[in-house]
Image (cartoon, rainbow, N blue to C red):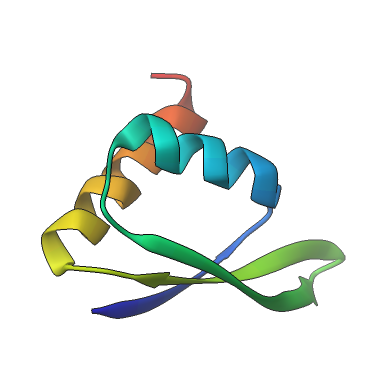
Length: 66
């Protein structure tokens, strides 16, 4: 499964979150865009659907402080 996310999270922090999540996915940087004056990283997520959901759930909790 391939999925793309747009996020202001720095790439180094995304990699740390990936390691902590234990998800078997791969993250690829696909460029930067700017939306409403906010720079966003375009990141491609590649891996099994369940592993992708696991990572995205972990990412939401990590960024929400939970």
